[in-house]
Amino acid sequence: MTGYSTYVTYDDIYRAQRTIAGRVHRTPVISSTYLSNRIGARLYLKLESYQKTGSFKVRGLLNKLESLTEEQKANGVITFSSGNTAQALAYVASVAKIPAVVAMLTGGDPGKLEATRNYGAEVVLAEPLEIRNVTERLQKERGLTYISPFDDLKVIAGAGTVGLEIMEDVPKADMVLVGIGGGGIVSGVAVAVKSQRPKAKVIGVEPEGAAAMSRSLEASKVVTLDSVNTIADGLAAPFAGEHTLPHVQKFVDEVVIVTDDEIAEALLLVLERCKVLIEPAAASTVAALLTGKVKPAPDSNIVCVISGGNISATKLKTLIN
Image (cartoon, rainbow, N blue to C red; front, side):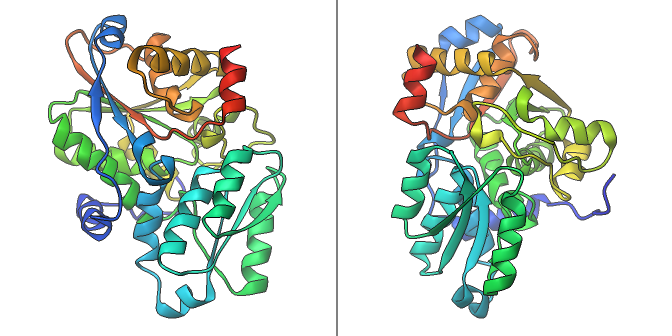
């Protein structure tokens, strides 16, 4: 276990839902007969790809910004991101008229970079293993408030509102699959689901080239990877969180790993069969089922969190080819 012992509660998530209500989308849940037949259970997709800025990230970041003091808001905020957090923070900060700085990956998705700048944030580019250091330096130099992309209780609680909506739409869910980058959304969703349906299983899914949470679980401490290499840039966090690791240890039943090829195949299958365009990070949950790495009980109710839909035309073309 890490040194942190404070967990997000159902009440925290419920309060977050009230805080962000009316400013985020209530995203739909759809079913797929084809995919259900493939896995031998009833499959539902929770489409956070239809969320503002194209991912679930606005939920947690909006909840966090609402907790800041007026002085903190005036001084501005900073985070680091491969793309989805960047866009989400830029958006919610611009609406609240809060200055925002985002450290983003050099060579990252150009569409996400452009969108972040268009929302009004200042973008600073950094290499993957230096991005956290760059963020810390700028935060200290400029007196900014650091907003963690995933390792913050307010952020986790906001992300957990996805779980509340899942339980409203699929109250008899037997299993919920969630992608893991740093672990923010899986932590919040697991608390929300387990609080209402304790027997439901929550399964985390990581890409093979960025399995920081799996490594951290094995070591029982936060592990930082030497490198990350995956098409699922939304799951490319090089380390788990000091808050998220204990949440996963306590509330998540299992974490499985999928390959980039498996993610790509799942993405294209969802596009072809469900007519929904999703990003690689979101396809990881479907990949875990299609490959048999997660085997649901027959006639059970399975929910895959589709965490985002931000994929560039260039990357999509590459995957199709």
